[in-house]
Length: 537
Image (cartoon, rainbow, N blue to C red; front, top):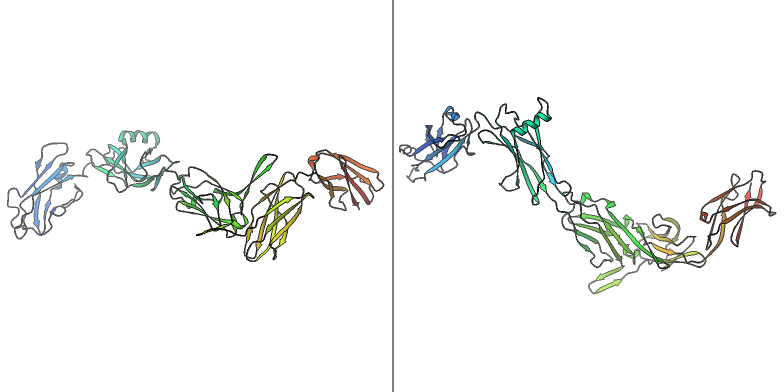
C-alpha cells in the first residue's frame, strides 16, 4: 500500500479520493468480488453507519473513488470508511486488506479562522519579564459567516508534537469583551496574558479555533524562549589573587554573556592605597587609566589584558576590581557584583620558578625642610623621553608639577616644595615616542613638623589698589593679623583672618589716596611675623 488520499484525513470539496499501491495492480480481476470494496459513512454524532456508492475506477497502481458531493454535504462532519480487498499484482500476488477513513469537513458552517498577531516572534520570559501577552485576531466573533465555540491558546516545546492548552476563551466571552471595548465595525482582538512556569528552553505558541462540528482551525505559531537563570561567577583568575608579568585577569561566569551588554562604566579598576596616622587607617582608591588595560567579553569570560609595562610601573600595588551590569543573551543580569582585590608583582613565572624583573619602584617622603622627595628606578621603555610628575590632594584630580628628562641614570629624584595637611598623592607618567605609561600612585604623609609662617604677594606691582596674597603655616590654628604699613612704619590698614584662610588667595583694598611707591604687607600669627614689600604705581 502506498499513500491514500486525502492525505490529511479530511475531505474538502473537489478532493481526490484514492487508494494507491506500490506497483500496478490487476484491474481486470479486481472488483468482481462482493467484498472487494465496501464504502460507508458514519454520520456525525451517530452510531449507525450507512452505505455509500461512489463511482470507482481501477487504473494503473490505484483505485479512484468519485463521490456525489451533494450526498457528502448531507453528512458534513461524518466519517467515511473505505475497505479494499482482493487486490493482486499482474502475477497474482495478493495485497493485504486495507481500511482507510476520512472525515467530511469544511462544508456548510465552517469553523472560524484565527490568527496570533502578537507579541512578535521570539517572545521572551526572563527574570524581569515574567509574563507575555498573546493577541488573538481574525476570528468571527459574532459567527456571521463561521461557527465559533471557543479558542484554545496552546504551547509546545520545540521539536515536540505535544500541544498543551494554556487557556480557553469561549465565544460568549469574546462577544462580551468586544461589546465592552470596541465600536461597531472594528476588527475583533482579544489579549491573553500568560505567566509560564516551564523548564528553560524554546517553545512555540498557537491558537486553535473550534466550531459546531469540532473541526479545528489553526493560527500560525509564535516561537519564544524561557530563560530565568542568572549568570553567576564560577571562577576568578589569577587564583592566588596576584597579577604577574604577562598575565591576564579572567572572570568566568556560569553561562555565555551578551558582549553588547558591557559598558566601560561597568568595570571599575582602582588602586587601593591604605595609610595610617596615629593608629587610624585611611583608604583611598585611585582609578587606573583605561589606557593601561583592555577589557574583552567573549563567551562566558570577561578578560582584562594589560600593557606590557604594567607590572613594572604598578609593582607592589593593590588593585580593586569591581564588575557589574552584565547580562546573558536573554537579558538576565548577573546575580552579584564582583569586588576583588589583587596584588601586582613584577615577576615572570618560568618552568623552573619565578624571576623578579626591574621595576619603577616609585617612593617618596616628606623631608624636614618641608619638601617632598620622590625617587624611582629607570625601567626599559623604548624611546622614553621624560618622566612627568603629577600631584593630587585627593587621589582623583592630578596636575603636572614638573618633568625629569630620561637619561642613562639608574635612579631619578624629584623635589617638590608644597604645603599640605595629612597626606598628598603622586604618580608618574612615562612619556615615550611610542606611547605613555602611568605608574602606581603613592601617598606621602605629613611629617608632623611645624612650618613657619610664609606669605606671597601676586601680582607685584599690585593692580587696582588691591593687594592679593596667600599665606601658609603649619603647627598653629591661631588667627592671623594683617597690616599694611608705609616704609616709615606708619599703619595704614589692619584686619584679622581666620586660620581656615590658609593657602587661599586673600586681598586687601588699599586707601585710594596712597601715592606710588613701596609699602609693606605684614602678617603675624602668634610669635611669628613675616613682611613682604609691594609696589603701588
